[in-house]
Amino acid sequence: MANQPPPGFRHLPGYLNLEAQKALLDEIRTIVAAAPLYQPAMPRTGKPLSVRMTNCGSLGWVTDREHGYRYQPRHPLTNEPWPPIPQRLLNLWNTLADYPHEPEACLINFYSADAKMGLHQDKDEADLDAPVLSVSLGDTCLFRIGGTTREAGTGSFKLASGDVVVLGGTSRLAFHGVDRIYPGTSTLLKNGGRVNLTLRRVMKG
DNA sequence: GAGTTCCT
DNA sequence: TACT
Image 1 (tube, rainbow, N blue to C red):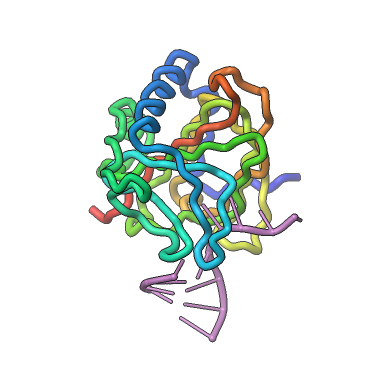
Image 2 (tube, chains in turn red, purple, green):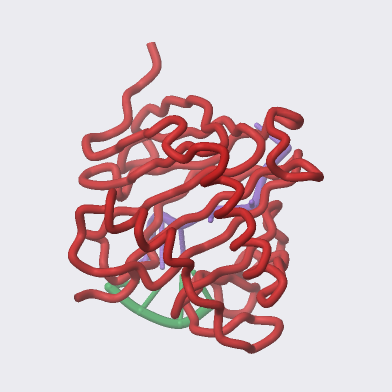
C-alpha cells in the first residue's frame, strides 16, 4: 500500500479547465519571451539540471555552480528584473493558499520528455509557513511525495494538465519530486512537455 | 560538523 | 553553494 502524503497536502485534479489552461499558457509564453528559459546548474559540480527554468515575480529561484540555491530579483542571463506574476495566478493563490501575504516568486519549470526532479524539500524560503502552490500544464507526470525526512516512505501518483497541488501544513516540508514525464499525454503544448508553475511566498510578513 | 534538488 |  502506497504511503499517504502528510497532512495539509491537497491535490485538486482538473482544477483549471482547458480554457483556463490555455489562457494561463498564453501568459507564460509572454513571460518566457521576456525572461528566457535557461538550464540551471547544481552547486559545486555544475551539473545541469534536466529541467529548464525561468521565473516571474519580484524574486526568482535560481541555482548555479558558484553560488547555489537562492532567490534573486533578476534573470541570471539577461540581468533584467523578472516579469510580474500574472493576475490570474495571484487570484489562484488568493483562492487556495489561505495565507495573508502574496507570493513573490513564481518558478516556471519546463520538463521535456526525459526531464526529472529528484526528491527534495523546498527550504530556501524565509517564510516556511506559507504553502507552496503548484499548477501542472501539458504532459502528465508521475509525482512522488514522502514525509519530512529522507527516511520516511513515499508514494506516487500522476499529475495531469490543469491539476493544482497545495503543499500546506506538515506537507510544506515534505520531500517531493517528479519521477517521469508521460510524453504525448496532452496536446496543450504544441511540441509536448510539461510546464509546472510554483507559487511561493519567500520573505516573512 | 552535517546537510543540502540531478542520483542508475 | 554558503549558510544553518
